[in-house]
Length: 436
Ligand code: ADP
Image 1 (cartoon, rainbow, N blue to C red):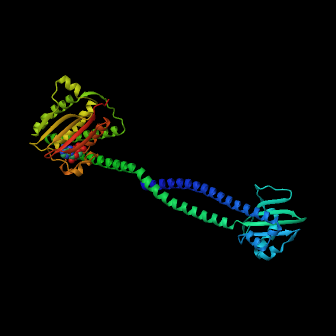
Image 2: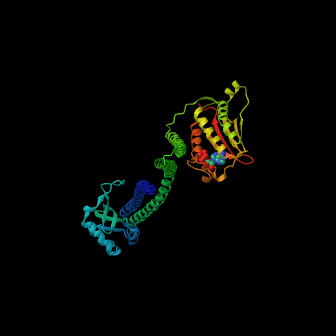
Image 3: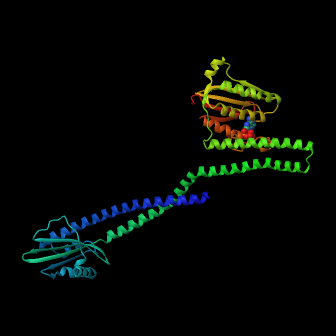
C-alpha cells in the first residue's frame, strides 16, 4: 500500500516539478531566441545600410565590393539599373541564389514587412521585410534611388540559416536538460516522499504490532476461560469448581488490567485523557507510594528505602511542590516501583530518590536487580516490549513503561534509564519545576 502511494506521490511530485521546469526553460528559450534574432537583425541592418550607401556612389561598385557585400554564401544581392538586371548579379551570383531572387520577385506578397529605425527620404526608398520559403528564412532589403537620372534598385537577401541552426541546437540542448532534470526530479521526489512517508510507515508498523500483541495477550485469558468453563460443565464437583473459579478470577483481573492499560494508552494517544494539574508536594507523593509498597517489598525480602529531602513538613511542602496530576504521577512512579520489585531478587535493594536539578524535579527509582542490557534500554519504552519474554512474569504485558513515558511527556517531562553503579537499573523521571 505504502509502496504504491510512494510511487504515485513521487510521480505527481515529479510531473508537477517537471511542468514548472519546462515553463521556466521555455521562457528562457524564448528570451534567448528573441535576443539571437535581434542580433541577427542588427547585423542585417548594418550590412543592408552599408550596401545601400555604397550603391549611391558608383565608384564603389565592383565585383570585389559585390562579393564582399554579399558576405555569406547563402546571402544574395540583385542589382538593376533602369529595370535591367546588372551583369554583376548574373556573373558573380551562383545559380541557386539567382533562382531564389527570382522566386522572391515572383511572390512579393510573401514578404512580411519589418518596420525599420532608418529614415526614408524621397530620393532613397528602403523597405525591409522577412521572407520564408522551403530553403529557409531570409531578411530582405529592397532599395530604390536615382543617380544621374538612372533608377537603381537593389534587393539584398540576408540568410537566417545560421541563426536557425543555432536555434535548433539550443532547443535540443534545452530539451536534453529537461529530460535529465525529469530523471533527477524523479529520484529527488522518490527520496523526498520516502522521507515524508517514513513516520506514517513506522506508525502503521507500530499499529500492526500493537494489534497483534493485544490480540495475543487477550487470547490467552480467553483460552483459560474456555477450558475452565468446559471443566465446570463436565465435572461440577465442589472442590474442583473452587479452584477453577479462583483461576478464572485471576485471569479476569489480568484481562481487566490489560484492557485498562490499553485504554489508558489509547486515550493518551488521542489526547483524550484529561490531566488534572495542581500543585503537588512530591515528598508526600513519594512517601505515600513508599508506604504502599513497603509491605510487599518486605514480603519479597527486598530492602526498600525512601531517600527524600528531610525538611520540616511545611517547608518540604513548599520546596518540593510541582504542578502535576497526582494520580497519574503516582501511576508512573508505581509502574517503576512495580518493575523494580519484579526484577530485583530477594536480598537486594530498591531506593526512591527525589532531588532538584537545573530547574527540574527528578524522581529516581534505583534497584540493584538484574539490570537491563544497553541494547535494550531504548526499546523497553516501546509498547509490548519485554527485554526477555522468558524471564517475564505472567502479569507483565510490556505496557508499563510506555504508559509511564506518555504520562511524563504529558507533564512536559522525560523518563530515562541508566545502570545502577554496581549492577541493577535506575529509572529517572524529570519534571519541569515550573509546570502549571
Ligand atoms: P512489563 O509489564 O513487562 O514490566 P514494562 O514496559 O514495564 O513492561 O517493562 C518493559 C521491560 O523492561 C520489561 O519486560 C523488563 O524486561 C524491562 N524492565 C523494566 N524495568 C526493569 C527493571 N527495574 N529491571 C530490569 N528490567 C526491567
